[in-house]
Image 1: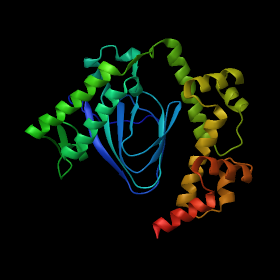
Image 2: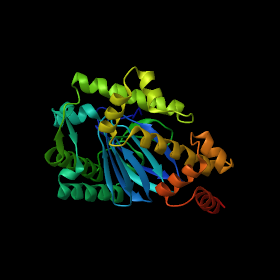
Image 3: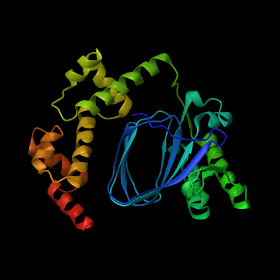
Image 4: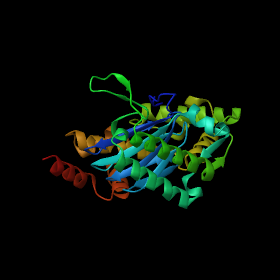
Length: 292
């Protein structure tokens, strides 16, 4: 799905903290804005495009424009999120259509951005629940914030992050090439097909036939784009659905496995143990104890 993010074009950045009190799965989505996520408390598994991250406090992740990402928090979780409006960022970086940002291109700069994020979280109450320059009052009305010294400081810190991203983290690529757009459309269709059919017995040939391409082409394209095979991605998608049902329903583990497309119960247990380092029954018991 595409996530619509409400960002005032006069502002260019929306800053907020996320608080999740229990394990939560946010399914694959994308948006035009560039997103920075700085972990404050708790842990989560986050897939960004082709990469899978196990995020811990102090970690910093970046999601480029129109890149699919999904999140599975492992219990209580708190993060600072900065959403940079695409067209506003383009004023500072005119080549934005043809580049992406890579935080690992300069680790010193990445650490500097981390420090800025921590300062923003610690220093400014505005960043907790408001859009920079604008916020909602107690009655839900949109109002202008007076630019106090603290507020001017906040804007300057955001601009420092923008400077670091443009100066040290640009990686050239041609995202607007027609062939790139066509391939991305195919990838989106694959994600959509899996979302609609994950609980059925789906094979590579089924997906390829539905899209009108050969199995070989679909397989290679998906691996090139995401870094994982279609089979591995579909198993992960099913596993995260099963995880949510283990947490939120009283269905038997065997029924949950079958309902989410795992025909072989023993295989489900084996894959669950490999991914979450415990069996489904142990996981459910842990959740039950936390909720008591």
